Length: 411
Image (cartoon, rainbow, N blue to C red; front, top):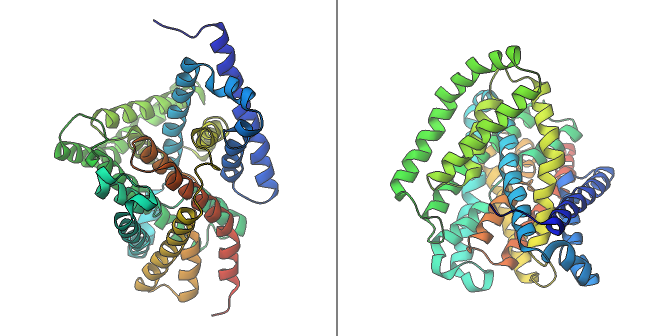
């Protein structure tokens, strides 16, 4: 079996050290500025990547990130694991009981907040594929991908904003959280199906087999799988070392679920997300256990992924002001008004609908994962991907102030 040599091991360790140090420094700066950590981590990746470090110190950048091919493959393995684990803890945040309690209003808001951006994004991308930078040979799928990418809400980001504003446990806050959870579930299911339609996707099972297995996997994991987890977790908590036993087995079932969905032609992240929902919804998974999983993944693996974004593209060479402007305007406007009209259709007050609209406009996590996968699949250009990243940054920075403004308005 081929292994890394002495120099390659040193290079890999230096890469990981540089990524984690930069992530921590800029996450702390973002926290001081009352911004989500992901904003600082993405900016750190841009600084340490070809955009800044590669331009100012090309020899050092080349040595650190481009001089050893096997090291880059190993680092990419870390990034892939990071994405899977990031979706796993995103699933842990989904509380099905909260979704059920909010009922039809949350469903209407979630669907409306997705449908309008998807339609608008599809129309714009399909009408101007070469200008916007979608794959002309896979035009329908690529255009749908773009629409879906601007329709996703950053659940972790909006949860943090609601906590900072003291709205998390209010009726408006719970409505936003429930809607965001539904968006996550619907978004990743639709995303997985669309990816299987792509000509650039993986070879494997037939389309209808893949869709059928995906649907069956989702239903089984959220019913039978959840029931099995409820039976096994008390035994794990009682018989195995805590929290070591719970951590190792949780990650094991996460990787098993991810490998299964990857096998049937759906991206591994979907399996990780669904098993996260099933595990997180268990009454035997304590808040302390969730916190340990969150701290472990959010402070080690998630930063590696978000910084890796800056390593993959040059944000100066690939920057196109027209594309960025279209992505940001279409993304922000359609997401806000989709959620706003969804709230009004559900009988929610005008003021509350405004707060919900701004809340669901938060991005900065899953939408970037989706965009990066589409980029790697050849569906989107670098310029369009950069537009999606900037949309996530603008939305993440602006969500808190806009929600606070809407909440204080007298209507």
